[in-house]
Length: 592
Image (cartoon, rainbow, N blue to C red):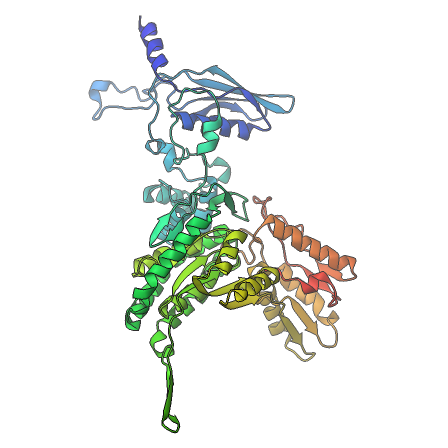
């Protein structure tokens, strides 16, 4: 009778088992079963495992509570409780002919599904990558509050509490921390529990999407209705951080209309009021410096120190905008001619726009919109689609600082949005920073529509080293300016001209460059992080090879560098070519 009742209860809990199948490795099989189970409302754990042969998976509510201390229930000060209710679910993975085969031994459950995976203790675990970041930030002396804040910036759905962080930090301090023992899987809270009884696996894939970056239009964060997205990839790990929408024309136009609508009242706002907002903005940027830096490191790859410098260089412009009252004063010349006085006044133009590159996600937006809006203009910002996070954070801070709705707007996209901006008669001025070909296109197209255009493009900086130069000072300057930010900046010192020849300098220059540590940007000891993408890494490798094929000497080759634990990362080590001529592609082309 009891068995019949139990079977009846199992029948009403419609949680589907995973579909049997084959997998390339053990980890892929386990991840599939766990993710599928989380989608259905149950959590899967490893019950037994022989890594080279088989693994037995069960529901985390399987088994029974064991009273190991043999204490009678009547003598307990508080009632014993356990999640274990002997759930019969069991799946088995076996290795057969170099593939892992999944079979479901018992697909039934004797409990209700979880309605929200955040209810489960596993949802408060730190992932393996987060544990590495915590370890590195702890060793760098970053405070626990800032560590947790940085982690929640990269993963807003993180459920771990300060207590979990303190427990982990205690293990690190006590030397009980072993990366191989990290229990890193946790259910994805963004995947709702699937109550459907359909046996297709499509629902899991459709729901398991990264965070979609919103547009910022009229003072509100608005999710784009565009169906196409671009993955924002962490260049060190190749993991998807978020997804950027390709904004539709109608959504872009909403941003321009919001800016145009806000312009009349904003231009008549007293300059002292606008300055106060900039004072508040620079205060908020300082407050959230670590949050911005961590986001830049995750999306762009540069070291945390480089990311902080990125923010600080932009902050200098915000501070400059705080003195806009003096900068906006006009001129007056009495009696310039017989009975004629002349004067000039500075007036805002209207809606302005900025198009940003990938290499300085905070600094360049801060070059653009603070000056423009403090002068009384409104602004439409298009960040680089490879790392939009910093611009969204800055928009949020600007709103918190008191910038009125519609004064600053942020839209995402690629070539289409750029062309919309160039062609839009409602936009009166445009600023662009980036590489040569898009810069020339933007300048020509926008200027043809009568816009005021700033187009700061390309950059191949040269150092001329005289024979009597201090070797130590010169080499330090060359290494810092040449390899900082992985060489991805317009002001990178990519070419050194040694008067009298370079042979006397080469060995020491190579040794200094070899001493630079290439690693994940969150590693406090890293000097160089990854380049922005696999495509850029491949392009650098091709340029280096073309130089060698054209007769250059390769005295240091960083193309094949591998960072342990991040073998898929877009890392390029310091690379030095000698005897380069001006007709070689490696001389003519810029990495940014």
